Length: 314
Image 1: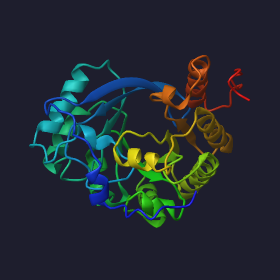
Image 2: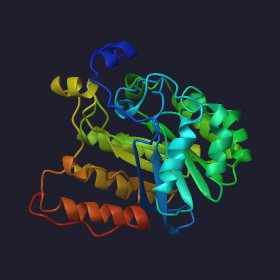
Image 3: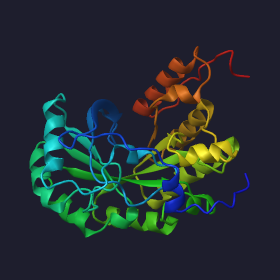
Image 4: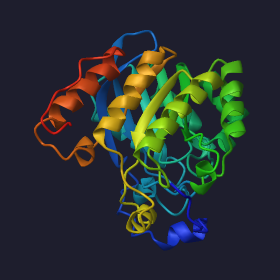
């Protein structure tokens, strides 16, 4: 697909946003427990806590996580209280993800003054996964890990390795930034995973598949341990505008299946498909449930499973 001449800047993206949701600073905006296959092959329950904090400073074109954020840094003590609230209402688990709609080591999002309390709350956990932009990956992460009595893992949004498309996403990151961050983390015995977009804007279905596969290859060659494939979803304002102009369309479920199959077959590390709200990528109500179950089993087992046959497939 030919790239448009839109001048995609922070200002342009912000101009098409709607209103943020009302959030409660005393609670994370969501939390849940789900099963995940670990690097050692064991499947265990993992808690995910979606923290409420200041919005990420990077206005990525495809992002909708800003909807549950604040405009200002939350008061010291707020984040530990949110974690404590979630832990009190979740079943006991040994592994946890703290997602904060941005960057855990951005001091304007998670005040460093709260690190000690967070570490205290996480006593007894075996692993902690957080998310971070490469520009916030530095020795602060090492210092935090050294005080943590758990293995620290960091998820980084690679998105795509398409040389023209990545800058259009307003990610403010280069492929060198990504690979350098992964190398830095590996040198300090911190595992990383990559978030990869399936069919970001300005790509058609075949391009979306091809570049997602290339992105998986790049991520593993850079040294990540895990890749998560995320179908690009509309609804954040800017993508709606691009959709109306013919520059964006969400991928179909078959493309997600193909990319997941490709990644698992590479046997370079774990590869997961993001199955949240999968119905929006499949127009057939007869097979979407079975296809969801199939990919969920592939996520957990990391082996190829027989395809689901349906009359909707030509």
